[in-house]
Amino acid sequence: MEIANVVENVAFNLIKQAVIYLPEDVKQALKKAYAEETSAAGKTQLKAILDNIELAEKYKAPICQDTGTIIFYANAGADVKHLDKIENALINATRKATKEVPLRPNAVDPFTQKNSGDNTGRFIPYINWDIVPGDTLELTVMTKGGGSENVCTTGMLVPGEGINGLKKFVIEAVIKAGSQPCPPTILGVAMGGGSDIAIKLAKKALLKPLNEPNPNPEIAKLEKELYEAANMTGIGPMGLGGKTTVLGVHVEYAFRHPASFPAAVAFNCWAARRATARIHADGTVEYVTHKGRV
Image 1 (spheres, rainbow, N blue to C red):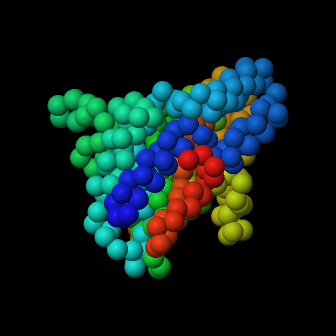
Image 2: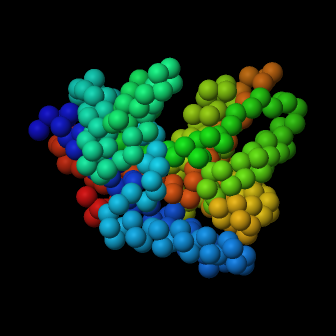
């Protein structure tokens, strides 16, 4: 079987998995939030979310009516052949998923305001490429809803304020976002590089599992501080008050120019939809995040 056919089939399965089944780490975080929530309104919202997750799995229907903008992350082994065919395969998979899952058409031409009807268009689905050693192609899809995307933000901080300036920037972003991103959210935070690099790293940080602590103790400490501070805002589930405003915080960084301090915060709603698979050189496929969900 040609790689294009394999990639199209795998990408279709990934999109279907992502929009119907939340990753286990996100489900467990929501269950923990429900068990620990003391606000009656917050607990009611978390119960509705958990019921929603159960119903989506039972009826194999998308977990949210906003099935998002389709974003792929492709970690391509340097020895993988026919990489030039992968983009078209991902586009075809998106069209197929739109029709068969189904997905809500969410790709609109900003000039004509016309919806393409199949979730494809100029640079959509968007593909983030990384070339890595080996002959394996790892694909991850993230279906990014509009509500959480609308509150993503970048900023140029004062270099002298350092990490304290970053903390202030993040918490102000959470407060400003309020209920718009459908909390409890997951935050991807990044600093350094340039403005474009920071938001790209922040969004990619959203792919990290909630149950895997950062191996860097200094970053892990910062993530915990931001997590605790964000939850102290009291915004709570769906903005109705409570202990849980965020489920987790992931921090990434790049080295920066001495004169600038770019920062970014990417939000993901509670329906943090992502799915990953690896395609090996012999054509075998390993579904990483959703085993048994094909």
